[in-house]
View 1 (spheres, rainbow, N blue to C red):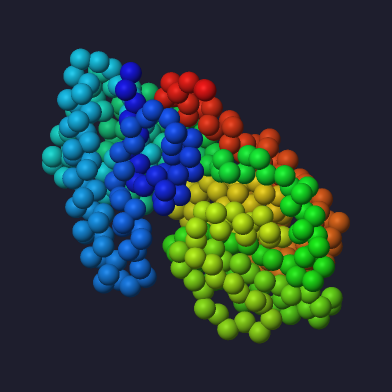
View 2: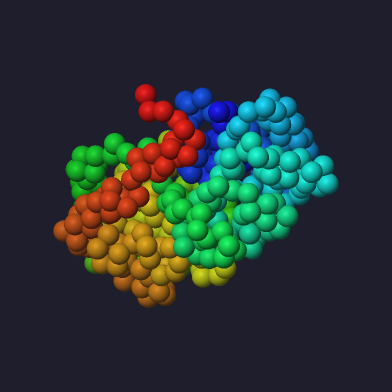
Length: 369
């Protein structure tokens, strides 16, 4: 049986890579991408340039590739069964009349076996159209989501076919936290490195806590002389006039993000609570604990499923909380080390990539070599 996977971009889209393609890149599965790598390489913060880029390297070629891809699936599998695994959506936002006809034909065919996967609130945000969402809910054999809140956004009639699968990172699989901590503890004596990894769209949450990070940097330096450094690994940067906090902006690359997490001391994941963030699956916190970083997160949504307060990190409810917990972890080496070990154990028990990989392979009938 032929298997096909629809995703946005297997390298640059976090959901595409971490929920799907990292598990199947070397397998015999046909991947149909919406956006080429060129789209991401040309992406800028300039609004006009981005609009042109969106039209010529995303919307038009992406839509065309989807139409051609569906036609090929239907033609090649006229007399046999096939599997389709859809990561988030086939047609992001814009579907059009031709897209509607072909999508319904592909999803409703008696020969098709459909799987739908998502880990953000794409229904309420409008990333997936109501037409496509209804088709996917009705025709999917299994719907894979990242948390219970996302499950609750689906119709009651399809709840029985929903499976939960956390978003995690396969590159954490062979991490040796004890070895990493030897270097971390040496650096900890003079400098504490905070780590934030994320995209431009989430920088707004980090910006809200930068002033309190500068405050705690002053307190830490006055008490023990340590430097507090914030490493921001992103496709954008923060420019902020801090008196004591050192900010290090690093352009995101997958290997660089892992490097800074491996060398860091404390992971950060600030969020505000709304319908969209409730759909988030705490992936950055999951990555942080995967490398043994005690992690401080906002006390919202799925963060509370990743971080156990006082065990592998802390849940911050307000500005005072961020200051207090960062200071606590920056001054108490024994507490930091204990939480580091607990963080890794949590990842191994609850967010182990081997479990997610096995689940994906079973759905797509991928045989282990």
